[in-house]
Length: 383
Image (tube, rainbow, N blue to C red; front, side, top):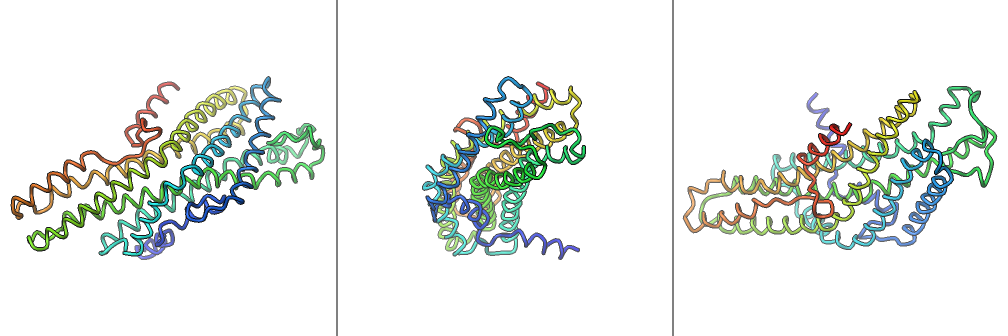
């Protein structure tokens, strides 16, 4: 039983670290090492046109509160996707040192022992599961939005469907949909939009998660090596020098990571807050009217938004814990067996580790489980 579980875990282990992120970003031409401006142009043009049609629909239904809220629920995330894609396109060159460092680590070897391998595998599996699960969930939500009207018509055997049939996008002013077959074809036509939106929503996030978890694994391995360092004076100095240089490099990479994704995460955080407020308001409105299908749909949407916010905070919490672990590793090493001139050098490592690395949104909101708990409590109190 234990062996089968281990084999299943290995299926999600990425030896090259960056494979999943490269697949997602490569589809939109945003992979930093292999930028494809033509592919990005067609991708961003499609999403911008889609967003523009949503805004037209919003303006046409501005006096209908129910339809306006439905449109805002989908149009606002697509606006965020466009902003995230543009911001990442402008800052993608900043990620190149991180990618080069990851490839260097992979070439030199990510681990030396089975214990270190378990650490690397755990963080690699966590990054892969985040990428796949977020892509699947974010693909499911807009697809549910598109298919909900046709499912409602199928359940009622098209007896209660009004003509022209309601579509997620306003195309009735271009072509009046009055037949079931035409309606179904339009719904199928809009399904690929879910895939394109999913790529835009999860591509940069997948790279952020992958790079952050890679740094976490290397911080954890570094702390373990400091604890188990050989205290023989002739071996201690060169080993400790290499570990301190490695610690400095990891801190530098963590600073680049935070700087690169700070603005993008600020946009994402504002989007999550606004989307959650709209969803809760719409949920309360729909529940009073007794529309169960809408209620179920918006509950799923709100759960996806809350889960995504929790994943960001959990990601930041892992980076904070692992980057601050160095001070405990120095303290629990056999420093008492070393000469005084070596023990004094540990004080600088401990002092530097007291300021952990972290992810921020606009350099003022720190992603951690503590901040997630504060936001969740304040949100529940408002409800």
